[in-house]
Image (spheres, one colour):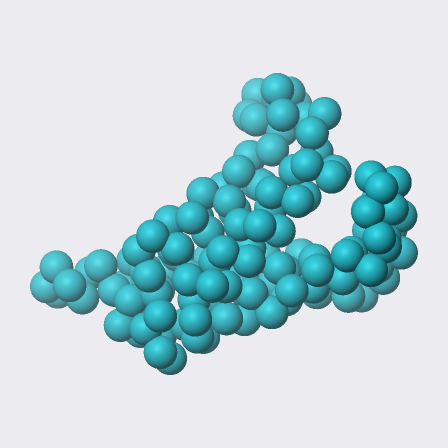
Length: 131
């Protein structure tokens, strides 16, 4: 496999991993309802309707990543979603470790870092519009 093909395969792997894992979070929110997220948003002084932005970041954006359709934009939406998640729900955990000794926000951190990597790298050849 040549260098360009390996780079494109790696980009595809990043997109699939991030897209599937974040989409599972979004589907869980769709199934469980949005009321908890609405309360969280309102508790931070924001309009409750902004809670539905999580569906953009955890359903629409992952689908964009999986298809490679404006994947840089999809990755940006996931990154923004993760920043909001940290600020609204996880700020108290920023300096904490979990029971196994890892960072309490390792999942959110990995989602954010992977999204930024996709934004910088682009979707690669195996995508709908290579943007």
